Amino acid sequence: LVTFNTPISKSSKFKIIYNLLFGNGKDTLNTYSKNPANNSYDILNQTLSNAFRRNSIKNSLTSSWIKNIKDLSLSVGVTFTALNLLNDFRFNQGNENKKYFNVFPVINIDWKEFSFSYNKSLVPPSITELQIVPDNTNSLNNILGNPLLKPSFVNNFSINYFKNIPSKSMYINLYFNGYFYEDGITRVKTIDQNGYQTSLPINSDYLQNYFTFLTINKQVKFKNKSSLNFTSGYNFNFNQSYLQINKEQSVVKIYNIAPYLRFGYNANDIYELNFAIKPEFNFTRYTNYFENKNVSRLILNSEFVLRWPKNFVIESSYDYKQISQTSTDNRKYVSLLNAGITYVFLKQKKGQLKFYWYDILNQNISISRIASDNIITERIGNVLTRYFLVTFSYNISSFKTEKVGGRSSLFLF
Image (tube, rainbow, N blue to C red; front, side):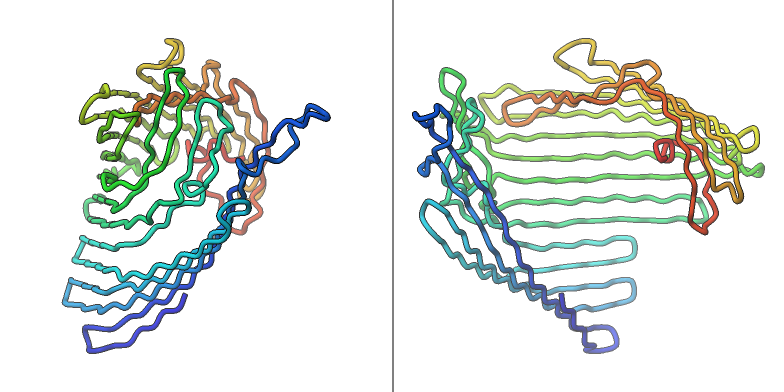
């Protein structure tokens, strides 16, 4: 990475950025046939095997004109991109060298608390998407590659607003980010009467993704050194894609909405109370044929910390999660209760002896449920349930030990 700046006038300058990037990747698929001599599958089937290697060299040069006018900063430029891809197929097709050269616009605007940016880039298909032999490791899901895929052009823009008001102990942050694709890559599927599925990547102009969040934080301080802290906002994500199963086609629009509210009270660090509520909603909508899907969940968090008597910290946390439409009713509601006590000692309180009881109610599970394409996916994982833990930690740094206790430090040993 090389950067060059030169002033044009008191309020403007010219900037050049050069970037050189090397990359390599490998995707190997081997299929073996049965050896009649020993009944083992140890004979390589070259027709259904391939080791796909890719080496890439990307040169990019961005030249920008930057102008400052009071609270306004404007940057306008272009990016020259040269991408060289060498695709090496071990058993099939041999080597393939592809070269791309493009010129893309770059815009950045900053005005007071607002900022805006736009850029465009070229993204080649991944080596998995170009793999010319089928991935049949899952007998019910045959994954094909497509060597005829075109690279995707990705348009990205973002808008950010951040306002800090120290006199009111308050800040506001609003952010929006969007991607829309030209020749984006998605997969079409065919499913036979036995449920056997085959998917093939294709180019599509339907792909879009947008994300936004809002955070509003307000702190109220009292004369007795206690304080109240309020945080509210939302996270919102929109994803649009193309879905084709056999002859049925649809545009899929997925909405994820997650508003939240957090409240905390701190009594001069002697004790703390914190609460949070976060409902989440997932809506999947189709333009035709397929049935719309809805999934929701509710998350509640609470926390208590008591730093009394001297050198002792007593703390507990309680989390509640509710998920709609799980496969079994006993997984819809999860309560997680934790508690611990810490003894702080030694010089400068560098030593901590902690006794911790995790998942007192013995209900901890790992489960998630999302709707996408034409399916609802539920993932259940193995996690640690109820256990008791004793730890000792010693801070070897020369910095003063921060206050002990709280959710952020509960799991730090």
